[in-house]
Length: 77
Image (cartoon, rainbow, N blue to C red; front, side, top):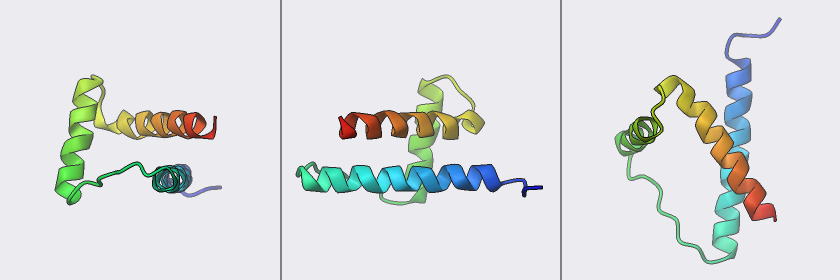
């Protein structure tokens, strides 16, 4: 029996690993990246993505996971 959020936590850990890999690749290739200034700014960015993609915020995590996988694959190639 697993805890209710076990899968979500694992997904977040994979996302963090992918983000760190992409950040390292950007640094390696001198690509400037600018993180959000604060949490509220990041929340606005997520809400904008959800609105543009016409999705609920509950499906936003899955969308972001898929985008990260795609970007990681692109970086590996």
